[in-house]
Amino acid sequence: MTDDHLIERRREGEQVFLGRLLDVRRDTVALPDASQATREYIVHPGAVMVVPVLDDGRLLMERQFRYPVGTVLLEFPAGKLDAGESVQFCAQRELAEETGYRAAEWARAGVLHNAPAYATEVIEIWFARGLRSGPRSLDVGEFIEVTTLDEAELDAAAGRGEVTDAKTLIGLLWLQKWRAGRWPLHWRAPV
Amino acid sequence: MTDDHLIERRREGEQVFLGRLLDVRRDTVALPDASQATREYIVHPGAVMVVPVLDDGRLLMERQFRYPVGTVLLEFPAGKLDAGESVQFCAQRELAEETGYRAAEWARAGVLHNAPAYATEVIEIWFARGLRSGPRSLDVGEFIEVTTLDEAELDAAAGRGEVTDAKTLIGLLWLQKWRAGRWPLHWRAPV
Image 1 (spheres, rainbow over the protein chains, first blue to last red):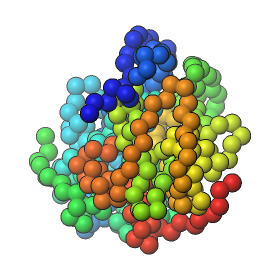
Image 2 (cartoon, chains in turn blue, green):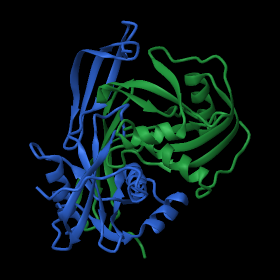
Image 3 (tube, each protein chain N blue to C red):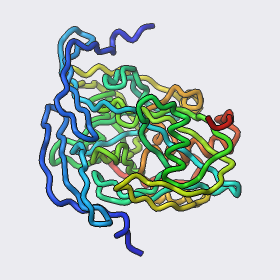
């Protein structure tokens, strides 16, 4: 079975806005019935989220103000890929920069599409353990509070609606599946 | 404890692109240390996702091509709020339009922020049960395949990396928490 009854094909396109953060495109596409439509979307370099598990089982997390939604969110550490960088290296770099922690073991859990209707963004989900603290080095203009929660605290906060960041909720899902022996992780050394 | 050490405050802003789908803004903000920064983001009307549970326990889902990520995704039904519409009404409308199903009972589970770094989007998570099929009415240019999976199938597919849509993975999380008696739902009639 093919998906020809669903697939859209690019006919032409242009960049309609290029800012410091956002690269916005507008394409004309052929729909499955050969009619045409317009698709507007953000080109994103991709990102990585890290679920950092401390030796005592607690989770290393961040509180960060997210301007578009106007509130401080509780999140797992994450960041965008730099040009030419491997995803695992990005995970290691972002964890170190934002929290100061380095990990002895890393595992790639999966990927997620957080806004597939209007962004190319793919977030890879990584786990880190064997964590040791060190100095952090936030980017200029980056204000992040590092905190720790155990799984039960994070689970309860999510159930009360206090955790709304999508990637972080999926990090909780992966964490609980992994700890239940359901979705395995394969650990490797840092790069 | 306040979050003054994290919060950014708007100084001025402008609309830098307005297309058929995307409304892009660029604001100048004051950072917690009073320095200035630029924030670019999409203004989004908000959306709703529905986790529709059939009488036999199976889940009503959709397969849809998502042009920005170039692939068909397996998703729970979802859609954007129309102007002036309540979220529950939007949930009922989108479920009926995309799948043809109407539900006798509805429950609001929670909310998620899918792209808080660059979009104002909030997705409310709703559950629907007591489902009865009827005619669907897709928008022009909308091509959606309706399918059903049971929870174990969806869980296994997610563990294999075959479910990547963020809201849908969070729907699975909520579904399993609800069925485990951990995150309760409060059912109500349609509006």
